[in-house]
Length: 75
Image (cartoon, rainbow, N blue to C red; front, side):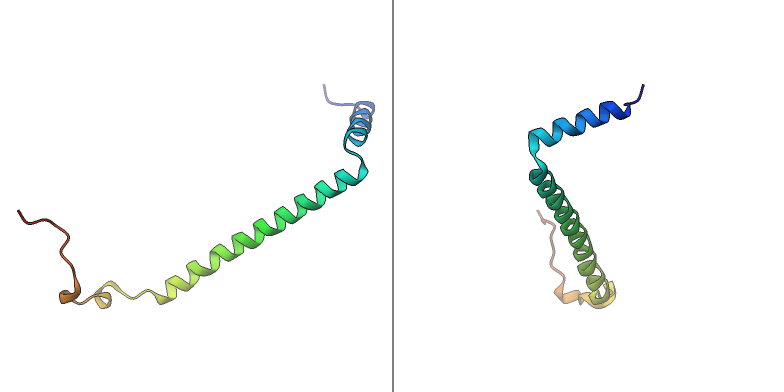
């Protein structure tokens, strides 16, 4: 029950008539730019996470006891 070659050809002709050759190539170019910017964004998100792991201090060195602020209410 798949599409035959003739059915695919008719669909392709209808799409070309509706959108035109220039519009389809423009849409594909925009699609490619979107994928490229998505990949760049994914790579940029990984960089700060790696930097933070190198800057983190162990818990015993981070704060001294006199620097700790009490957050509980005493009633």
